[in-house]
Image 1 (cartoon, rainbow, N blue to C red):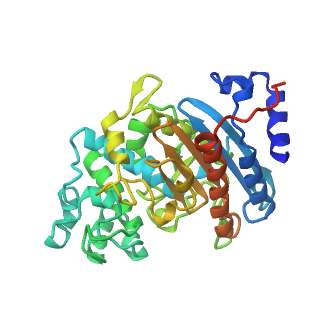
Image 2: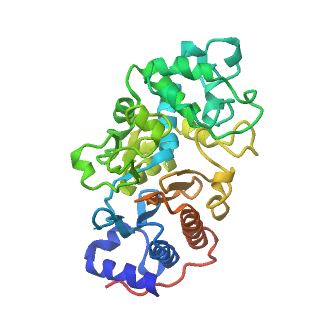
Image 3: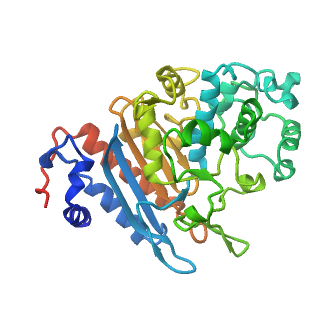
Length: 391
């Protein structure tokens, strides 16, 4: 009941709300009261200041709502649907991976090629089996995290230092989620394209999709709407990337650094579920999207190229979506999950680390409850439940 009270007054106040669901009659509207309740409980716990949650199918936004506050310190500010978030590791699938796949399409990168073909610092025999596809699938042998000292000089000098770190296991023999691997993929994009990762993504992805609120290192215009993350050395990170390794690299890195809104991320998801097209414009080939989302190196693998499928990180959401779904999570409290068959996508954005790094347990619960509510309504409900008539 509380969820209905939160949703329907908003719809009654907006006469054109039906435009969000052009093909659904009122009695067919999905019941997302479970999403409302999960978000309200998370905010009431005091561990998560606020959230923005969006659910869509194709170009239809089925649900988009904000809860709680975007900041608590030094003063409270309410969360809005247009709040800009540090999306943390969602940078990997929604930024770096897409940049790499565009370069693959343009025959600038081969997925099966060794890293040393693109970064000369890795041309030694020790790295012969480190391929781009293994890096995308976190199977290349790299440590999870790079040493701070290796990154401080910035690229290109950091590449030599990271080569000196070496591998932790033989490439292709296991899975280890690796920020270091994606940091190096960001540098691959820079050297192959001739542009820094942020500029290349702006040209091939952000601008074609009309993403006005997606960027690295947001300026004053976006910072005014940005949810702050954590206090670091008594300094509140607002529009500055939360990940310390991305900060060492100036805010632009292959593993973290993107800022965005739920609406902008929905446009990326729409493009992907529509086989690489958006508003009649092709951004990626359909075969590229299929290749990226196919579990690799085998059908039972827990990861695809840049995306999660069934790894331990997916346990909170994947069971509630259909087989073949893909997604990712982010440390700051973000997540995206996509079902390609039904063209459904779910976006959860929070700044659960604000103001003092809390919310670890609660964010898992929120992701699970939201995914369960979405899955129950869109995938597993035998019939649509009736909803009250629109005002």
